[in-house]
Amino acid sequence: MKSFWNDLPHPFFILAPMEAVTDVVFRHVVAKAAPPDVWFSEFTNATGWVHAGEKAIGGRLLKTDDENPIVAQIWGGEPGDMEQLAAHSKQLGYHGIDINMGCPAKSAVKSGGSALIRNPDLAAASIAAAKTSGLPVSVKTRLGYTYVDEWREWLTHLLRQDIVNLTIHLRTKKEMSKVPAHHELIPDIVKLRDEIAPHTLLTINGDIENRAHGLEIIAKNPGVNGVMIGRGVFHDPFCFAESLPLPSLTDSSLEESPRRSLGAGPAPLDVTRLEPDVNKQSETQMVQSFLRGTTSEVQPKEFLPGAKNSLARNGTEGKTIGTSEASGANKQYLIKLLHLHLDLFDHYQPQLHRPFETLKRFFKIYIREFDGASELRHTLMQTKSTDEVRAVLSKHSM
Image (cartoon, rainbow, N blue to C red; front, side, top):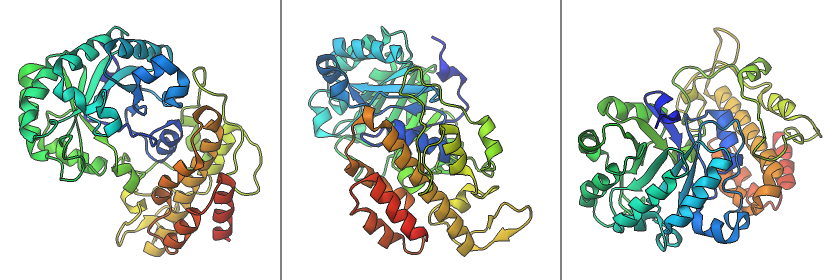
């Protein structure tokens, strides 16, 4: 089956699905910072949706048409339910189905996730069920359940299921994220894939910090097709940025940005407060306000939190600025990203119904490694609404 997977660059980069993190809101923030090549939804329980509908999945499959390509990640232990949710995902406009066979959380292991490592027949049946949707089916898994040396038998089984892509988190379920990922196994895994299913794309995941790090791994293992980054985005919202300078963040850059077509999602965003005294404006105006005034021609690595002894351009050709000024520009950019996150959170709240407290896990992404960041983050953690967050940010910027 020919699909978008066949047209991806080599290597391609994916934002990992993370529960209560990679919803439609955060995906759009990442898109403005530095987008990956493929988007994944939050992982969504098939049985919950079949028996309780949208209420059970809490907006996990909410998407917009400009998220292209985007894959619905589903999980569960009932192939019939997987078949129904896969078909529903196709109706929603998803471009692929990924089955989670690696989540180590207790709630997932009860009926799916990494529990399927111990039930290969059910894993195969789930893949077959998802394929009835007509969408390309991929799998995300781990090396094994308890022991690392389970990987060969388990991955051999999956590779024989004729899946389009296999993403491997290079740890076992038991290891969680407590030990370094087993990158040393990549050459052997590539060899196994080449022997059994050379048509199946191979994506690696685990302890990969950013695009540059991923490219280093690919250079050593050219048989790997893709890189999935999860926790790295918390340390670096620009983790998918190219090594080339970021595009000029001016109004003109918006002409090349995909405008949101919301046939399958909520109405276009028309309310924002990127600045405290701004009231209602169109989504295009919102993004323009967000981008207006940010620096151009900034090397991503120099624009990241924690960049050491770096120089950054201030948008004037040939003029460089020192680390203190670069830190200030970085601070302003990250705070603008936080404002965008707040506005998108408010816009999608009627569909997502996410508690305000879930926002607080993101503050550390934007408020970090500049003078006063620790104090500001502490104050933000005491807030109880997005308006309170904006008020604190406004007061801090005065």
